[in-house]
Amino acid sequence: MTKVFKFGGASIKDAAAIRHLGELLGGFRGHPLVVVISAMGKTTNALEALLEAMRSDQQDDYRDRLERLEADHLATVEALFGSEAGDLRDRIRSLFAELDQRHRAYCHEDRALHYDQTIGYGELLSTTIVAAWLEESGIATRWLDARDLIITDASHQAANIDWQATAQRVGELEVDSEKLLVTQGFIGSTRDGLSTSLGREGSDFSAAILAYCLDAEDATFWKDVPGLFNADPRRFDNAVPLAHLSYAETIELAWHGAKVIHPKTLAPLQRKSIPLVVRSFETPDAAGSLIDDDTRNDGEHPACILSEGQTLLEVHPRDLAFMDEARQYHILGRLVEAGLHAELIDGGATRLLLCLDSHPARLEQLVQSLSVDYDMARQDDLTLLTVRHPSASLLAGLSEGREILAERRNATTAQYLFHTRECPEAWHIPE
Image 1 (cartoon, rainbow, N blue to C red):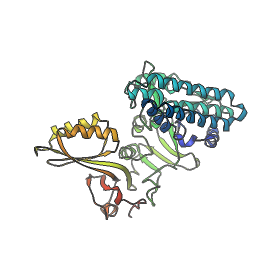
Image 2 (image 1 turned 90 degrees about the vertical axis):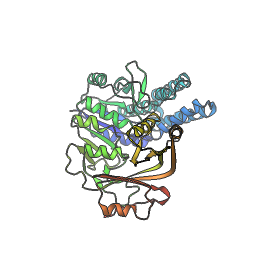
Image 3 (image 1 turned 180 degrees about the vertical axis):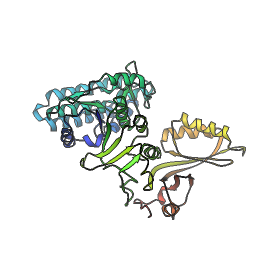
Image 4 (image 1 turned 135 degrees about the horizontal axis):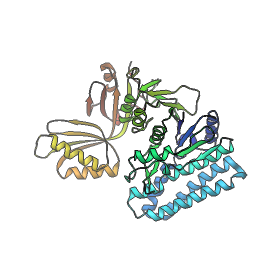
């Protein structure tokens, strides 16, 4: 049966990383394999900055950014292939010329449309380089354009999958042990061929879509961490690895802000009971974390998730009327229109508390919209702590010495909102 592997930008950030990727994949010769790859390193961030320079008509800045990004990719090609880089160098230059043409063609169109016609070049460039290196390493490889496989609607920057059309396209692939298939994450296209994207960090979702349509044996996400932890080990000094979780528990963690798995990823895998393994490309022999239907290990360790850069809005009806269902519906509708997600919602008789990610432009749009009809108080620079499967003593220890600005609790999850200035750089999960 087919395996689906997904590699993020950190795993191909430079020539040394790509060489390591080739060695890793060389260990899977003889197995039907589809490999989904993100853009190199911070390329997507660079492409977003390039788009903003073009849209603000800063032509000198645009040209400088484009040339630097092209030079970075060509430097990787030279480091890998040296004097043999001729044909690949030409293909990379051709992709950058195509990217430039698309910017000029779409810069006066809606931003989301412009974004989707240009942002995917990071993945097109990275997979072109990686596929060439795999061939050079003796691994027979076929490059595939994900825009021919992942078919979506035209909801740019957050496209919805056309599952019937996608299943038909992917089902036509010849996947065997003779050639490894390499394609891009994050991008797709409409039935009419207009490029779309699945949302930031959508490469995980791309891999899950392909695994679902191929009835894959399993999917493996190769990360820069050795699996899932019960907290970010960079922020919690006693975080522990999680050998096993269920789909349902992993979706809860992702929904509340855990960064390892994209929130949309688990549903297609769960529908066909396709196991997901999270492993480290730096230590590929480590077991990693397994995610499947089995719920027996859920809650074995409490999980802590930090969401920083939060804003708290306290919304009140001006006439002291009840914050009833009609008013909540009205306010949350404005939230949807602004394209924002509330990490925490808490209500009272005459107020509604909303904890939101601080997307400046979208947040200002929401504040202006709500201030027409409601009185509001606002606090910025906050940190939201979400704890799954907490004990009372654990929550008391985590909140000690900090003012709780808002909180929400149910049988399995507690959320506390604090001033970031009161939060430590290094956290500790109480025993």
